[in-house]
Length: 363
Image (cartoon, rainbow, N blue to C red; front, top):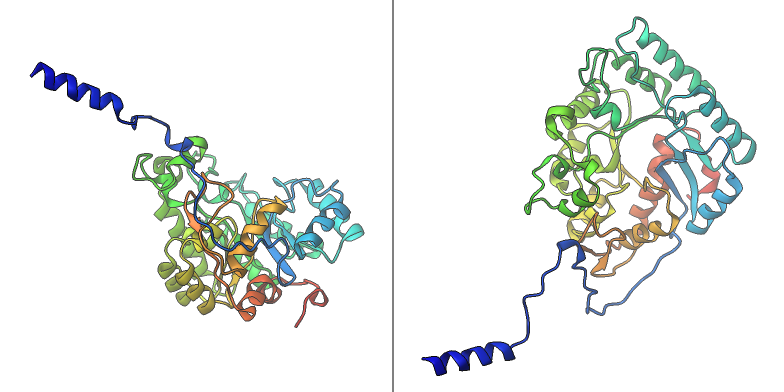
């Protein structure tokens, strides 16, 4: 027996060591798969980015910014943060800079503040500000995600975006003919248990402030339902449901909502990885709803647009997203037709957002 144990021990010592341990976030091996690569640094057609934030626009060098846009073939950028965080001086500075230096290249959306919603006359004051901003050149209203989750009234209660006091603002947008781009909630896994069953585990580990608590914000289902409620109530107002309504991972449900609510459009900002991992299903969806989906990006980093172009335009296989913590899976090109591309890149936005210069785009 002793001899057998010595032999077994010798064999174990001679085996390769497979017991190396590493944290999940450290495991990121390069793929050995060799497939054709199509690096697209400039969109096939001029496009409108309907979801962008330029917080420094009152003093920003717009010539430098438009040069970066030209390199991407971005004809028009929609800056959703016209008022920044609610300041009149910021809004006036944005409008002045754009009108004097690049009036054809930027469309500005205004914003409202929910602070003071309990005060008498808040609704009338907010509607009046909206009208004034539109008269000054604003072409849409952006609702921030904080206004659907985090803002509280004077009693400490979460303000619901379908609060009756906000309703006249949405009605006025319809009367003025301007769209409302609204970001409600965040990806649903942000509310789920942070464990090995959560697809956003790595993101929540590295960006722990993104974890959500239903007791504080309301559940994901509650917030999304409140958003859909305003779409249904304000049928004469056009809504752009940001980030595919956080249903890029469930296009069947998103499609049913599109069918039910013809005043709801959507855009692909920050969710291109959801489309890229389901190329056949995503292409089918974008083809069916080609008149209702717009191009958006959200965060301004020019080189990240290349991935959007590659997903939409190429037929490439198995390529990575640029933020592994955002999407650890690989993606595939959708190879959309020119007809669909043109609608997503610019035609749908031209129909929905007023005062974009049509001469910047082909027929």
